[in-house]
Length: 446
Image 1: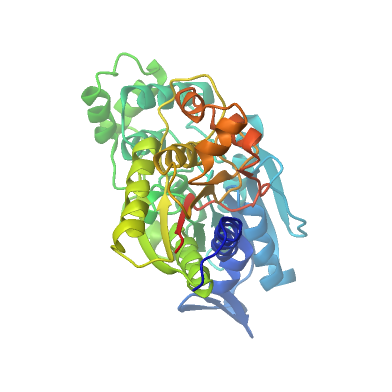
Image 2: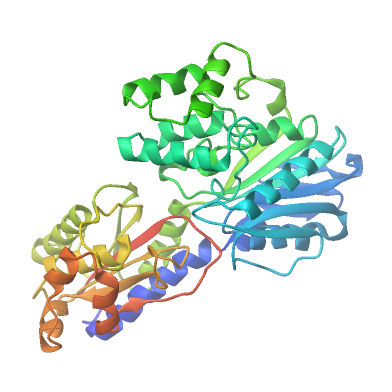
């Protein structure tokens, strides 16, 4: 491969990102696994005889809910009796049979509660001879807000806030959330039973854990009420959580209210849970595009977590190693990674984890020729901004100085958005209606 200009490498990085994005387009993801073969509905390796089905319902929640439901309408047409799917405001598609209910995300609102009640009501309508198709994607947890009657939405939110502040893990937070919800932790599967349930899932979590995605409304819950009390004690918050929450969980631990459904229970007898889109699929499609563009490729991991600036430093070190020694792959090279990092906010600026990653990496590769970095969220949104992410190269610091900008100051103030806005290096895709976490692309030229 001949040496490419830095501008051509930047365009390559964008093409690689868009190839990854296309692979996890929600409608495409559903169609890849579902098709109609005469009277048989194929879902991956299973076949469902629709001549034995009375009614088909479509339910679900998440940012990708509308295009996923649209794909099901295109496959099944008039066979669909009715449906309700909760989506984030503005994440729409034109549908005929399925009602799209816009609701609050990431902060749940009353519209979300009303939509979830409708979803649960329709689920309970399904009989043994009916088929329920459920579409789940990123944001599904916030878009399915329906606490048990003893707990208000505000009390549930306060509990989540306390758990976050005390340092509880996502699994611990989910354990508590499931036990004060009517729909999470297998609650939807319980409502649908004895009808057949097929759940099509677009994963937005590290490791694609089914019980974590949208807090697992259609999968068995391995946690218990007693686990929730242990979590409260572990972090010393038993006295801090709202009294109604503690009382309800204590009742559950004493067996006075039903546990969440567990593995092996009858409610999951007729349930198929299938991941139709994931970060790995996105990264693999990006790899395929990079190879087609002439780059040797290396996938670091699709499970990268941790502080964004630290992750950027590691990626920069790998890029420098490749540039200097040809290890672990020869140039021209493309290093890919996925997952979701975190930003510890200390400043008062505007940005997101992807923009901060690119800014930090740009500082680390200052002066290094032919290194390009792009990082972006597959949902088209990075933090509270209208950008999906950003792109930069080894000349970032030099160009910034010419504009009178100090990149380090912007990084310290967590103000990556305004920095890249002035550099004209923001990556804007608009809402993509999908969400499989982030994609990071590092190109090292010859």
